[in-house]
Length: 343
Image (tube, rainbow, N blue to C red; front, side, top):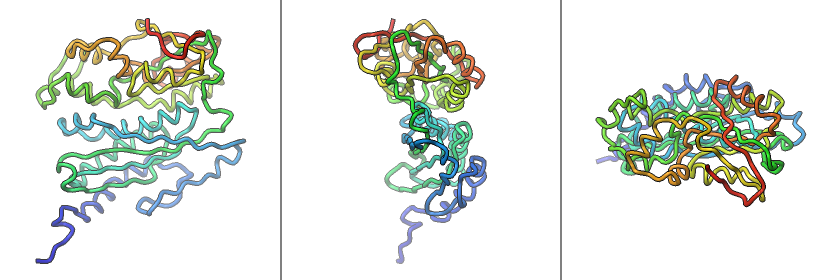
């Protein structure tokens, strides 16, 4: 009997159909610098617009969504997980002072269901729109026998640009500078292996409504990661220098805040200076998790931390709020051993 690829579990026609279905989402993310159409072997992007920069510098970020995907599988909801994927990459670029230019996604699945793939890509496109990045390419790999038929993995890669003199490096941060935190939307896309230990991972459990959350557990856990590109751009356009910046991801406060500090500078963060989203409180109580572990794993309600001059604090918060985000003075920096003190 003659063998073929389809019998081996790979459906090439489904691949073509996925591309057709996702085209309309991809189109909505286009920027004038994008050359050529979807479907080529590579994505092309003109560098013409950056000629005026003194020292144009590329900044890049790559990440996946991690085990948050397990929540999407259980809820059979796939149209927001792409926002998380984009957020994890472009927030890192914005954190360095960069403007995201373009994004590529990689989806590996057990079975290519074109409508599902298009659903995932619609979320990726939404994340690209929120960050003004063009979705210029991607890959859908059907890998039967490697992934279960109803599961997939999603990862991505973004490239941005910044004039080198405008990079946010943290080197000029000095004692007395103020820490401004931008609110997160919840758990974002880190620490889900612990989330999945704390709560029962069943359809029923995820469909349970909690008064303190104001929604079901599943809705709270699947809330997309905030994209901070426009908020940071708004601060820069207000003429404010962001001296230092940290994207609070896996490793929480303890691991990420030191990354924004030069040697000899210590961050002091006041825990009660902003509202902590109820999902963290619920998780902490249910899992009997110690404070230290919570702040060492989760963003605890602050997704991006900025270090600014005391004179710029009010204007920075105004600019962030003008971009539609919430911001709080959460602490300051002082002379001391590089690290973070929570009080």
